[in-house]
Length: 410
Image 1 (cartoon, rainbow, N blue to C red):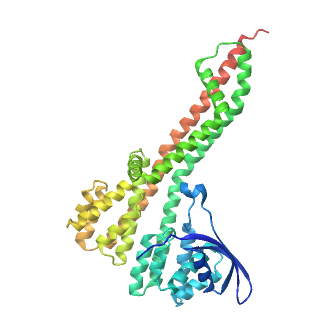
Image 2: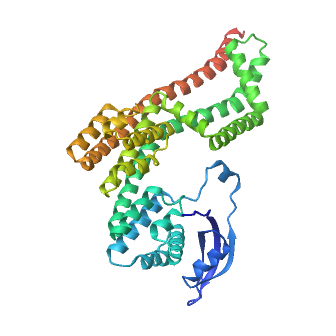
Image 3: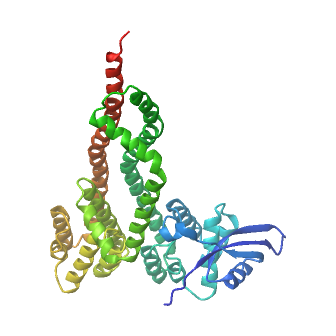
């Protein structure tokens, strides 16, 4: 099926029956589609403008995705309405009319319009790849065949809740080093930009020979004050170049992912997070009676690290060639012994669904432990770095000051 590039449009209009003024953001191919879509909701469009993307969209720091919280809210509302016996189209209309969140309401408008134009719900979701993951659309497509949409939205809600918990663990791992790094940078800026220059004048006026660590501090301070614009520009250029190269070159992205797995502590954490994503997704698909090979292929797409994703894709090829499940993954060399053993036992016993669920629970616990280990490893390193900076400044500044006081004659 052909996919179209969707743009975001800010619209203003009024409801034809009540005259009530409405506004919002809607995803569509063009302005004509915006007008036609909103007419189905008896909304007359007064003004419609496409959003401009700007430099941040190029960098990739901003996008049109739902937040996970918004996605969870949408799935929960769909589950509740469908369980109450309300048909699909009417459920989407009710979400648009009554939900307080404009983003959720506008997405429901777009889905409703595409269904009205003859697409199924899963096909409509696939035209919003930045909002609905491929896995979610695949699960909905399977549920459309059985007529069990309510239960699949319940399962999708559970999946998003799991992702929110996973993201919470990742943030927990990052927040401490981010705080310490921010304090270190702030300390350097204050000392090099303000404190050190004030003391430099006093030290120079004493006409005394300064030790090497003090002259190094003074030179660093003068360089920062005199060329701060060059430093900022250089950092920005380097970051922008790396981001552009990362976006443009698949081999560069693969190399970065490969290097990240080799960082002590960090690599193991990233590996466990990605394998946890993969195992949870495969367990979810297998419960929906997906064929195992298809489940592995679809689940590989939720893996972010390209080295691990390549290993999963290789395992899928091995499965297609007739290898047993455990051997297919063992040959990649990227999965732990316990993972291989559990996959083998689950496949042989005919209880793979239970085994995958248990394995998912194990990796959830492993991710939590990896967070604690990462924090325990980073904490002393960052403390030593910050302490070293403070010690350097203290010795470089107060050592000569103390020496000058000793040399004073009263």
